Structures are given as structure tokens and as C-alpha cells.
Length: 376
Length: 151
Image (tube, rainbow over all chains, first blue to last red; front, side, top):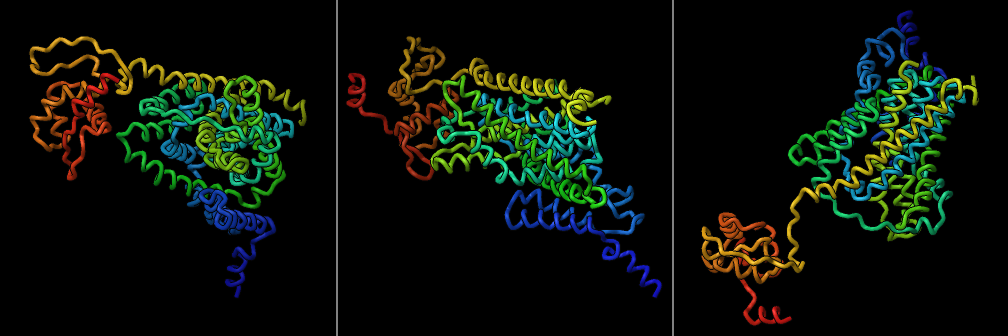
């Protein structure tokens, strides 16, 4: 009988408290949004399931939890805290990305730069709310709307915040259809939303092959701390474009990125143990994340409007919202908002140009913030 | 510590301003470089001749080692000129032939841009597919040629 009581006292039912229940509800919500509503299912489903796994109460000392040094989850989590998975995800992203539209209209890269302003505004906001500089830098990068970049920088600067920052970053990426359209509509007139973009010129294969080599050199010379992200990103793109490594590119954009995404999502989800995750800081991070993402969207749109003051050939300011690096969610949203005004207005390719420059921009920002925080 | 004081103490203003400037300047430079990329490539590349363009062809001297074929340089822009040059080669191949056979002869005789020229001949319906991968030669008639010259 005593053995039975001892066993029962070690079960999850006995050990559970309200925090576990809250997190399990959040995990279930992620699974629902991913599977039923199709909101970023490739991200939300691994994370949601990870939240369920990570919030099963267990007897401490068994080597089960993600924060226990000899557990399986802890070994898998190694890829997160070292920044390994984000680098691998970037390799796959590079092998997927077609820079043709950006090469055809390089001026759109400025919108990718403008959208990064959300990061620096949020840095100030986080400092003002009492976060330490390294924590503030990690929270600010949520404004880049890039999950792997957020995780990478947080792993380097404030590893204790990986859970809330990753969840906030991926949540806002999934909520793009909810967050971005009202901001786009608020900051643009109907006339501006109706602006049609000219057809893009054809980009030669040589340009596409040379671009990743030029890109990696220019960006990484400027911010060497972004090498782990941009190095693999441009390498993946070179594999895709050079034309002689199709097998490698194919593997990078399928098996490799899928494996990294599964492990990244599952372990980040599992890292949100209720007792670690449900703190006042997490709530502040979520609020700041929303502010960061909104400012990033608004900065891109406003900058596009400023550019229109000087450009002969006006650009549709909606494209500015695609300057965040949530690929391809924000580009798709820009296209849909444009089409809701004019069904024959095709903004997708131009938005993808801003989107891919946003990826480069946010990775450079991560490198810059990491460099600033060295020695603090 | 909270508020503006916290930002100032942690050097937040400088970090935000410098960070924004660095990322902006970095992407501006990258943007400028890629905007010039195609121009640089065009400078180093020999652009293939556009058959639609009217281009003056310089007088060509007959080459001693390739009797019977005049190879104007640059390659003739006029499709009739191409027909005239290719005719003896095609006649060697017979009534129907594979494009690979014609291509091989062109290559052996150092004709420039044989792929482009064959494409132009196909588009002009001078090389007509006859099914099963073989082609026939259908040059414009003398009458048509005269009309084009006069026109």
C-alpha cells in the first residue's frame, strides 16, 4: 500500500499545479491554431507539442526535465542554447530563397532596413522597463520577426529568456494576419494601396550566383557576429544557385531544415516549464514583442512613404510591411491586402524582395547587438 | 532602475542610434552593389547579337582555310544572310536531318553562336520539324527575298 501511495505521489496528477495547467492550455491552443487554423503549422505544432511535453509534472532528479543535465531533452536542447539549430535553419532558408526579385529591384532592400527600426525602438523600451542590456537586446530582436534569429541572439546574451522570447517571436509570426493588416491600412491611403508595381526585369543566372558571395562578404565584414546566421544562409543560397550542387541544396531545403525545425520547435516548447516560464518578465516580454513587431511593420510602411517623396516611380507603401523577416508570411499578407483593394495588383514578388532583405537585415542586427553587448 | 535614466545609464541611446545607422548603411551598400552587378557583368560579357536589330555588317574577306563559306563578323543580323551561308551545309545533310548533325557541322566550321542561330532559323520557320526529331530546310523563295530587300 505504501508503495502504491509513493507511486501516486510521483505521478503528474499529484505533482501538477496551476502553472502546468496554464501552460498545457497554451500548448493546446498552439496545436489548435497550427492544425485547425493553419497558422504557421510547421512552427506552432512542434512548439505546441513541446509545451505539452515540457509541462508534464515530474519527479525532480530523474533526469527527465529539459533543465536537468543528463536528460534526453537537455541534450536535444543543446542545439538551441549553442545557436546550432538557428544556423542550420538559416542554411535551409538560404537554399529555399530566390533573390531574383531583390536583384531586379535592389531599392526595395531599403524597406528591409527600415523595418529593423522596430528592434532598436524596442531595445530602448526594454531598457526603460528595467531589463538589463543583454536581456533588452534579446527582447528587441523579436522586432525582426525572425524566430531563429531571436533564439540565436537570446542563446548568446540571455539564455534564461530563450523560452519566452522564442514563444513570443513565433507567436507574433503566426499572428501576422492579425497584427499587420490593421497597421498597413491605418498608415496608408486607398490611393497608395492601389499603386501597381512595374514588372521586374529578368535576372541572369550569373547575378544570382554572384549575389550570395558578395552578400556574405559585405554583411559579415560589417557585422562579423552575424557569421553563424548569414554565413550559412548565403552558403545555402549559393548551393541553390550555382547549379552543380542541386543534391546538396535539395537536402538543405528539405531534410536538414525540417530536422532542425522539429528539434528546435520541440525543445523550445519543452523549455517553457510553467515554473520557469510564468513570470512577470515573460508577460513584459510578450508585451514588448507586440510593440516591437508593430513598430517594425509601421517603420517599413512609413519609410516607403518617405521614399515616395523622392522617387519618380512610386512604390506601393504596403511593401514596407514585408520588410520584417517573417518569410513568407508578411509578403503574403502584403499581397493579400493589396489584392483586397485591387484584385489585379500582384505585389507578391516585390514583397518577397523586401522580405528576403528583412532576413538579412535582422541577422545583421543580431550581430550588431551581440557585438554591442560584449563585455557588458 | 527604470525609464529614461535606465536607457541613459546603459548607453541605450547610443546603441540604438549606432545600431540603426550600421544596419541601414550596410544594406544601402549591399543594395548599391547589387544594383550595379548586372552592369558590371554586361561590361565583361560579350552580348549575343539580337537578330531583330538592324546592324551594319562589315565587308568580309573570304577565308582561305574554309573555302566556300563567308563568315561575316559580327554574325549577320539578317536572316537571309544566314540562310545563304547555311545552305551548302544543309544540302550536305540531305532532305531531312537531325539538328544535332547540323550543329556538329556548324561547330566544326567555327560558326559563332550556332545555338542562337538555329533557334532563329526555327523561329523564322526555315527549319521545320518533320516529326521524330528530324527537320527539313525551308528557305524563303527568291521572290520573297527580293521583296524583303526592296521593302
